[in-house]
Image (cartoon, rainbow, N blue to C red; front, side):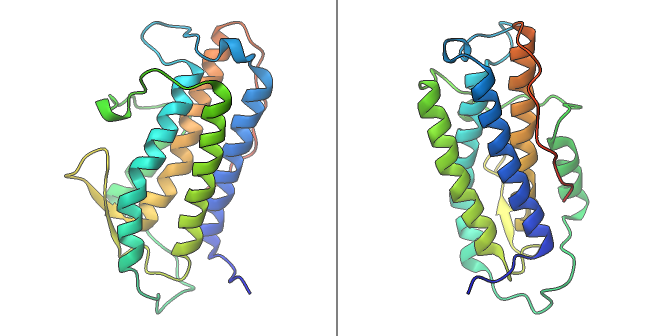
Length: 197
């Protein structure tokens, strides 16, 4: 029998699911031939936004797996997990609308993008992998296990922070992709309701 997810982990899982639904709504709205178009030469296309999210998921695989491998059972499984101040600030600035622009490190800048169908299929595959991380974290001391940021090796935060920043990061760049489509003359894309974690 599968254990019930801790409410905070369930909230993260729900946000992952909402991000996936958001991407598929965008796929329905934007013609395949227009995914690689940029509305501004200095900004990413919708395809590049999704490619960046795929790169990010792959980059987090090793540090999150390392943290999960060190995890021990939480002796207080019903308590509320906390990010800490630095983790809260990171989580707060991560989602849309974009309040702070941060220069993306070169390994996470998408180069030539794959065809749209392939990008979306990879996103879906990686989304299931990330949901598996959330399920594997259930019952562990996720606010005591440390993760090294793949974006900056000098930055560390707890596993709860790492898991909780990934869905808003997805929503941030899907929001960006939606703005690209609107700037190219497309209609507004309806988005799913997000929960606060």
